[in-house]
Length: 80
Image (tube, rainbow, N blue to C red; front, side, top):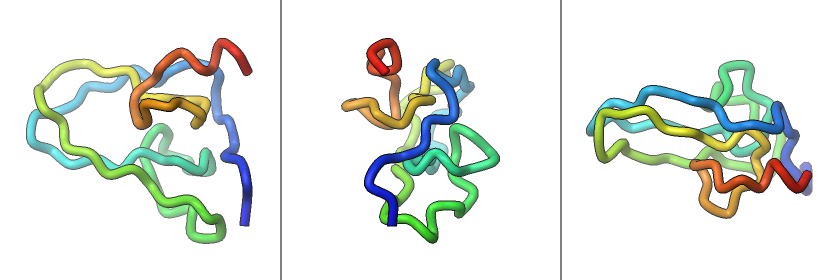
């Protein structure tokens, strides 16, 4: 089990979300389909963050995996 998530990038991922669609944001940092989960967390203590898009629009999802507003970027990557 890992105490801290891996940091795939120190910047957010810009993605297009679709209203009403459910997404699973990768919290462990191991997914090969960043910023979304591909099941790589199974050997860690992390679980993906499930969320449903409230609107069809672009969004910035956390890439460093340390945001206090996960799955969305809060700028924490600037301090890592």
